[in-house]
Image (cartoon, rainbow, N blue to C red):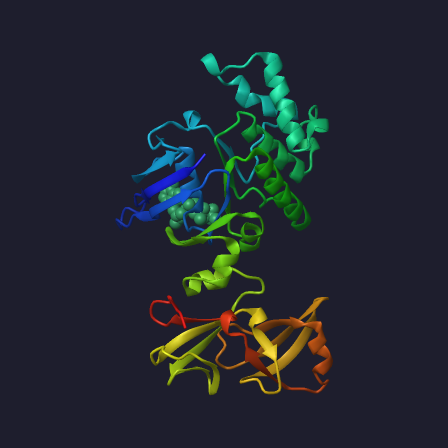
Length: 366
Ligand code: ATP
């Protein structure tokens, strides 16, 4: 099912009697989410991710704008009639019910023509339980399950009504690191098997990048960029997006453009012909540095962190806005670094270097 958001806006009134400042939690959000895709809604805390999700589910009413599921305008349709499955961070399972009863609950609540015969309900519950691989745990209570298993029950409960859209709000936050990895792969598999259009909220860029067909980066209620994860990583529209995606994060420097050359400190690091002279921010991805005796960019070498196949060279430069510069290079380079070496020179890979206007922080293409 295609989801279309048209100028969706949510304004919360001020709770502070002294000031009348309202909060624009979501500001003029327009987007079409194609049928059958897994979309990651990404951004820092408070940027409006959950509010967007709740407006799509119907739990919160939009202040203005419209929401369509396929061709149907659902803006004023109640949550229970929208056909969405919602999974929250804290699972919200009923503790006194077994897994089976928890999964059956949404079906038992259906009324009228939607109500299924009992045997069909049970069949459906087992079908989704098999899909999320908890069919052997049906008689247990939630407190007899691991966090990952509880999250699967919550997903099964959301899927049992065969929703048109699946909405997941930080579904992995309560899981430990290993389980998060495993469960995110599970979500991807379940989404592919069911083909349900899924919107998945997270503040973890790695999580969003790893499983999403498409990501939406938000800041202060405003969509910054929408696209395939790799495209956004390779082609960020502004400094915020460039900084938000990537581990280790992008290295940011004060720089300037003068006479068609990009300078970081005194070093002319790249040709940027055709770009007007001005002060800029320079972002360099960790994989954009190539250690080289003839390198144009000179840094102070701190240490080398071995990561296996690759190494991370940690260095500093007075123009760096990050405490240290992290470059990721092939482990072959370690052999060329002398024990008492104090400096390191890099050549830069042009397409891994981004420059941004200092005032607007928008990208300047070169
Ligand atoms: P997090 O990752 O921390 O959950 P989020 O990106 O999901 O954050 P939202 O919960 O959508 O952010 O909140 C967006 C903004 O709206 C925040 O500034 C928040 O304080 C504000 N907000 C959310 N709900 C309300 C409310 N009921 N009343 C007033 N302001 C609210």
